[in-house]
Length: 466
Image (cartoon, rainbow, N blue to C red):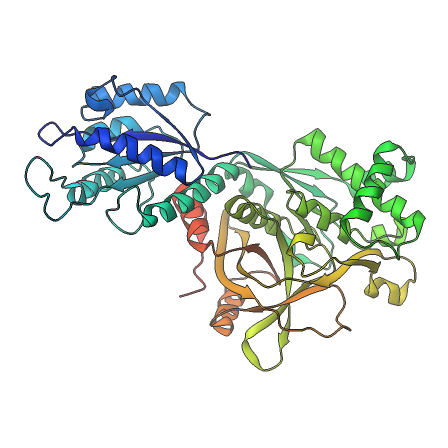
């Protein structure tokens, strides 16, 4: 991912000690750089100390911001002193990106007029007016925080993730390769509703993909893809002709991604590929996920959306999994599973590509491509969404994958997840009409997703942790 860049904005207030802004400019810039991000700021000579106080100064900053559109992912509005809400309003009303409000703390022993900031109070003057004027903004704990503190470092990292999700979920395209399997009404979605949220669905008939694969020769791209797959996971069991077919499918999907600028995709994975092409595309989805293209199976396009959001937040691969099995008598543990589309980097060890046991049972030799293995132990977030009455409705919660063993006879790629109050959450998911799939990402990021989804993207939130 490209380095997140923040536009810096500083408040002013004529009767307050404005020279404190100079320290703020230096400290905020240092904090951003220390956290590994970039920044841009209006010249400090443009106004008194480069701060924003009056409406005219706010408009000057807004003009500067517009001139640098596309160079920043979010705005940090720093309040080293009490803010003037009129200048702040003019400066940021058209920012078009997430805005983090940061206010400096006062220090005991420096409460005289030359040093007292009153930013604790001034922060409310900005949040009040921004709320009145419907300017979306982000506030975090603690209410006041010094830029060079560890608390603000954590704020910056979370805000950067919010910016990535809020920006990356706008005007992106997701490919839908194949029609929904008739048996899976659970994966239905409203394409027009998604377009309202700037999500464009590009739909392709599966027969076209099959035709492209069947007429494609073993060109250089296919040969390179075979080598890529063999290096990616253990393909030693796969017959050579099936390896070639898998590579052709992968190259064809790559062509779709390149031609239509797809940011994510969902694939009809059964049973035409198995009956016609004699392969199962699980390992191809696994490889796509591992190289940063969220790819869901079973035409579960909604899962691809939350997979993308979590990948943007964490910078790591995501996966779509079934709520599949209880784990003994433990009410807070569940086996999350899918046949083999899990990214290799999320697995405990290198997988092995096998013949898919479900297809092998009734049609031997038809299902080569399931990347079997076990999911590694890591803290995780799980999330999914649905379209309902023209709205996009989403949930997210947190848990962890454990290193609990799943017996060898369990096929596919699964892992044991421990989720606090799991039984209550399952009831809420069922009552909310959510599907048998959930998507998972590395790390705890519920707060990031909720802020990006509700404050900046306008999604409806279902709280299953209530």
